[in-house]
Length: 150
Image (cartoon, rainbow, N blue to C red; front, side, top):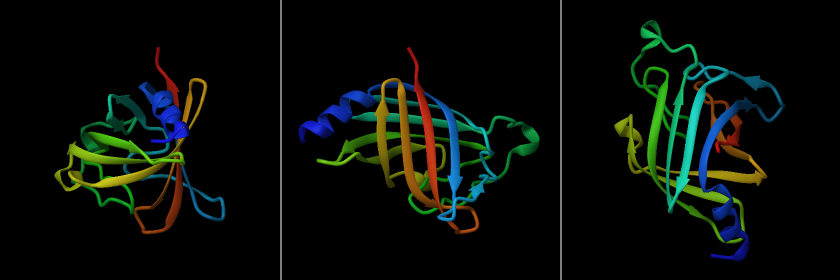
C-alpha cells in the first residue's frame, strides 16, 4: 500500500451520514432512482478493513414495499426501498479507488459482488463517485456526499 492510499484508508475510517445521492447522465441531466428516491436516508461505516452500508427510501412505507429490483452495472440491488450490505474493502495503490467486496446483503444476489468506487475526503466530507446504470440501463455517474458523524 502506498502512502497516498494509506492516507485515504485512514481518512475514511469512521461513521458517515448521507447528505445527498445524485445520478447524472454524461450530458449532465439529473436522474432520480425510482427505488431509493431523490433523497434517501443512509449510513456508512469503515473500520478495520471492513465496511457496512444501509440505504432507505425516505418515504418508505408498507405501500412502497416491492420485490427485489435489478442492480445497475457496478451496483447492488435493493429490496422494497431498502439496501443494506457489508463486507471488506481494499484501497488500490496510488489511486482513490476502493473495491468493496460484499460478504452479506439484504439481497442474496449481491453476496460476493465486488463494486468499485472513487473516494475523496475533505475534512469531514466524503464524496463517493461510481459509474453505474439507471433502472432503464442508461449510463449514469452517481455522486454520494457524506458527513462524518462525531
